[in-house]
Image 1: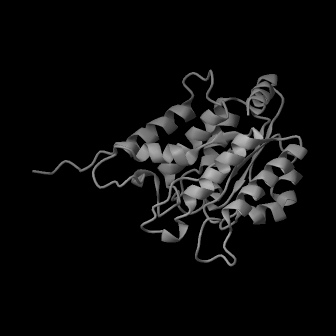
Image 2 (image 1 turned 120 degrees about the horizontal axis):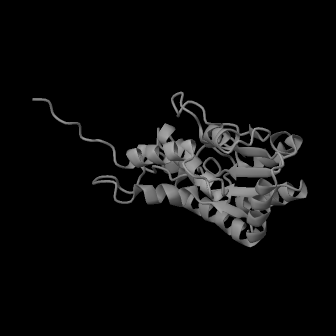
Length: 247
């Protein structure tokens, strides 16, 4: 990871145009659940090509709703390789972990091996892989995804064993939920639109965590995008609720 992080920092410092590919499932695809607001990939696009002034960089979002790790590997050429990326981020696992609508069910060991293969393929392209864990899930409303913790851990293990940069969104969402009020039961209610799709504030949180993980906030003073994202997440964690009663 140290080598990848140093390599990315050197690439950014060089001023050379960077091609970013961000792929995954519906969370990265970013449809519907933001209710018309920007997805986390769109926030990163604004930060990179706006605040950071990297106007010749290109940010591609190749995620597809409902996809799983094996599907991305089968379509790797279109999802990743054809864009000749310098950096590839992957957030996956929310669909892989279900025990209901997949036949056969994806085993954790199979998933871990597939993520490792993805990393290997990205590196064969000469690109820098970045793994993201998926956000937490409200298991009361999505009990079929009760294995999410095992799949998150598999991603962490691949990152550790392969020396890959890891942005632990799952841990960040869990930390957000801590101390947010009675009845919360450890779920980041303010960041979710349903059982597992982040809402607009959730995508702000994802973008902020990813930007930090990629080093895009290092040495950036008063970035409008970063400031706005941080403020949005802060309000989501401490909403003005309940409303003031009228006389």
